[in-house]
Length: 311
Length: 218
Ligand SMILES: Nc1ncnc2c1ncn2[C@@H]1O[C@H](COP(=O)(O)OP(=O)(O)OP(=O)(O)O)[C@@H](O)[C@H]1O
Ligand SMILES: [Mg+2]
Image (cartoon, rainbow over all chains, first blue to last red; front, side):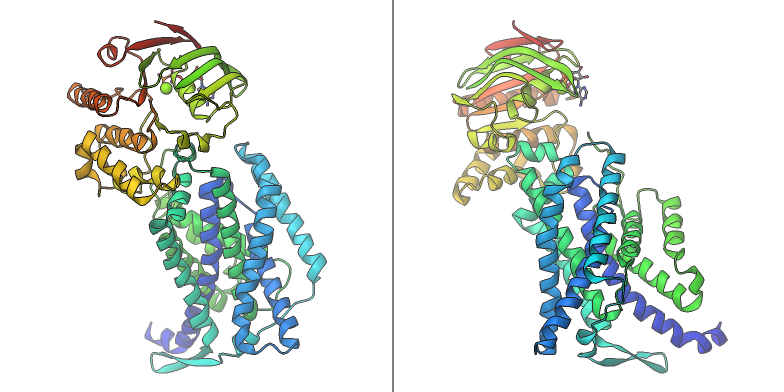
């Protein structure tokens, strides 16, 4: 064991740091997916596309603006702007235009519709950005690297991935928990999630809440994508990978669990990252292995409560 | 105050209410009696706008409300305590009570006044206020559901089988609360559903009977 560690310790450290930033990104997507499912009762397969489009929009916008002399420090505002744009435009268009037509319909139909939406958004994305990799890492380079102490060694790692990405995820977690528990709008969202009809009978406009929640969830996914964009070169297929991982996160955490989603995102992020460094051929299956192992023991998810849903 | 005039309601394409007439006068206490599956809940949901009327007219407080969206109806002063309580389990009891008033954007002073009035009518609720609704017993939950309905039900409250599943002592307490409510706020109409015809006799002035989706005067 000690021998293994002295040989592979640095690699493990790198894997954990990588995993942390990856977990933060997956969390941003999963938490929105969870929120949206709670209110709409629709599993939105196209949620990952919003991550991808958020990433592409942020990279394009960043390239465009920095070519016109935008100072690098303002690049972070661009990431946020991209998320707001994508969520604010695509959110209402998708909810009003497509999803609203299938509320309360059969699960299979809903799944087919959101899958179709996913395919359409993938094509739209290829139409706009093509299939060549898109790369804009200025927001990451700007902060440079920090030396992370690891045992007797230090690992130089990008400050952006250590501070900014997990920082935004933690702020999202804390902000969301506060918002849902302490504000009226948040409580209204929880009320509709718990019991839409009872909420309506209390005077809540469920259609409005649905639009708001979907737009918000879309913006969170897009923000995840925007945050990811400086760390990687964007290619078609990012959306599919993200949605699959966030499904695993939601399944592991249990529905309606925000803090639980954070923990299970960490498990998935770290697990996947360790696989990437040590057994790359396992990268794709590790998240599923974790998911299956958890669901075998606790079918309702680690933090989920067994709920009886009314129709 | 509340009126269904020849209202028919279908659920999933099946006719459940057939051209029913029901009238609850201002300040009146009315029972709707029927067996399991007769259509009691459907009648209340139709009044609340939770199910659309295929034909007929719904009137609330003299106002044509047939096409009024469900979420606007509490604004007319109608409170609803559904079957099975249906509280928001993760909220404290206090937040369950406050939610409808906050959603209606009532002034804070008015909300506080109504909360005090509800505590006055249902004294047990004051102690329960900080508790999570999910942890309440069935009887406590029914009291909270009644209190929540009263927070907006300044003109009428619709109570769906509140006595079902209550132990005799608790049923007694609930009935007393309804009597207090009528004395304290005589202007509030009360519509209660029940399957046992004898139970509500001392509490109401008038009864309707519903059978297979058809309502008749008792
Ligand atoms: N969601 C639904 N889908 C199909 N049929 C329904 C649905 N809800 C109610 N019904 C039918 O409508 C009829 C009336 O139901 P309703 O719930 O109004 O009866 P109820 O008098 O409230 O009964 P209970 O005493 O059991 O509460 C029943 O025959 C029921 O089977
Ligand atoms: Mg019923």
